[in-house]
Image 1 (cartoon, rainbow, N blue to C red):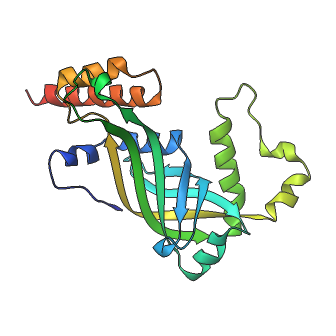
Image 2: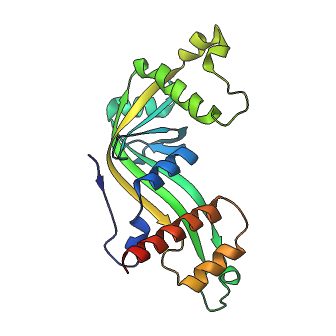
Amino acid sequence: MYKSTHLKDEPLSRFHDYDPHHLRALISDYPLAWVTSRNNECASLLPLIGVFDEAGTLTELIGHFALSNPLADAFRKCSQTTVFFNGPHGYISPSQAGRSNWGPTWNYAQAKISGDVIVDSALTPDAIERLVTHVEKDMANPWRSAELGPRYDLLMQYIVGFRVEVSEVSAVFKLGQTEDQPTLDAIIFNLPDGELKDWMIQFQVRENSKRGRHH
């Protein structure tokens, strides 16, 4: 099992307090992540699929890259990687908080995931099918890789699948948890509709639920 790193200082540690389904949603909704080699010698944006066990713990990340990608050579030398997912984010103005003496801030959700990479051509078909199924799931007529016909085998010669065995996760969900209720209500009310607002509402409901259980 991986270890999860957290800040010890309050109130910042509250941004590291989240439920397993939040990490799953972050990876699912924002699959395009920075995949880096050891010491960040090279990095590439790649879409990844998360694999979770029955307890909801992230165990693996599945992806693929072109054989010409510098990561291919980097991972032959060292299998360690750090992956960065960036979720909903946005600037929060004092005018949205309804307080001129309130400092502006930036709300966001992100995850930093470390582990060992296994690169293997035998993983390629499964990596492709997982990704295609995920990104096409909401399409009216989902596309399938079989529709490529003979081009499928040709394109497979230029890519390779990989999986990351997850050893450490550090996620931050800075979504208004430290604001007093009137300020948070004002921010949510004044934010334009969108993903950041939706995620802030989710965490407001979660915080209210936690407070209710403690009273």
